[in-house]
Image (cartoon, rainbow, N blue to C red; front, side):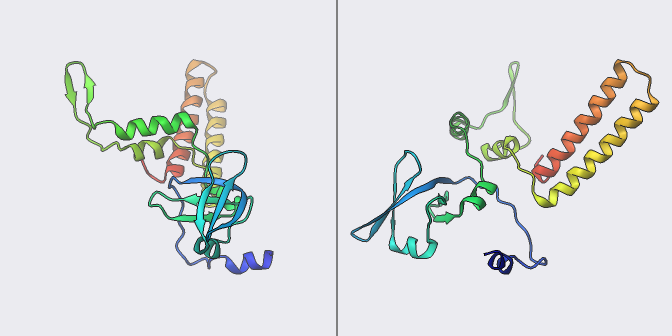
Length: 193
């Protein structure tokens, strides 16, 4: 199996991509045998089953424990559990409801007293969702995060060694930490803000 995985790895000179899309999915608990050429994929635990045809089964070869995935355009796929769970996080119901309300809202300005100031940046629901979503660290970003943390530690040590102990020193350390967190967010968001 390990040899197969190594054979499938992309050569290092191919472009790399990161996923940031939202899908509907469930972990497959059972595949129910055909009923007039149709199969049912039932989720683990409770929830509605999904009907798929033999074409889906032949193309995707779904396995119990893997994920049935439906994309926004209606395309259906299968993902092994490890790959899916490394790439996606569940959206808590209350957040999903808030996004849906936001998506239905009319575009509006920002209320500043009696005046309405129109936004200069198009703050779409998708932009806001991406901005506040969890961005799990990826391999290419780990080195950058480590470098920034190391530089932050050096700066904090310099402040502790060279500055007198007082409220301003504490504030300076806090600002350096904030700069580190902002820099790490910049990397995770890939320049979104």
